[in-house]
Image (tube, rainbow, N blue to C red; front, top):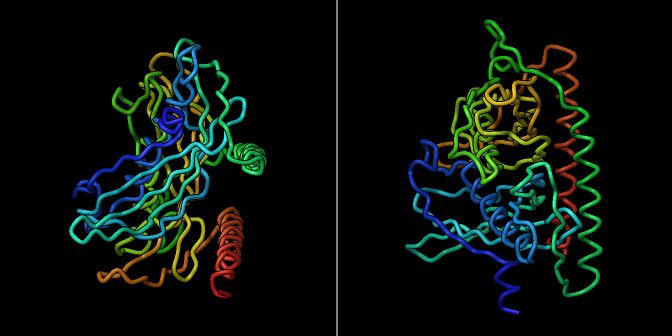
Length: 338
């Protein structure tokens, strides 16, 4: 029983250093996302190799919406706990919680809750998806709830992949607070240190780069200190191989009074070993907030939309914002009624 617990639960911690944070001392959201993914990759790979059979490594397929409940600062210790909560025939669901600990006072607070999905890929044949050993559930309802989450994320991944295809082009002399004024791109050559045993990019490395670009977009728009507030589902559509050149692009899609939504996507150019056309590998929406020097929320400048596509993306972002706001209010109702 203790061995099963070892396989299905993982805890690791690390102190936050200056190179993990921005100039205001707030830890980058991408740093935390990378730690979350590392924990998920370890526990899911460990579980998928728990039975005799073909050796494999778990590859990240999707990260559900992740909220940054509280900022983490330099000197805090991040305590990351991961647990396998559902397995299908070819995928693993991992729930990850992050606690921030002040080691001087002992105070702890929850900063993140995340749900990740992994698939086991054979070490001998990267295109071969292996079967996942099943887990035992404390009661039947947990398995049924997990199956429902599995079907929902499977459908959402297909919908997201169908709408991919946009490309961000540079704008000459853009007007202030327009989409073109803050949009940003980062080009990165995928090296060995970025990759798994398969020679493909770690999901956490990709998410950290995406958060970096989103942060630049947000800072350009507000010209203040900004922090990650949440990340909508991150979908990994295609694997990115070592030697690829990846372009991480971000653009503002929507602003409310105190938040801004940034669309980020990753395109890969695999021109080293197998030259072929550029393809969309990852996509997500990041939400940022603007903070004063005292850490208080600041108003966000209204985004100026110009083209019909920008107006459409703004309305889509507004819909996501209102939907999230409504869900949060529903979740808060039981607390206010107690």
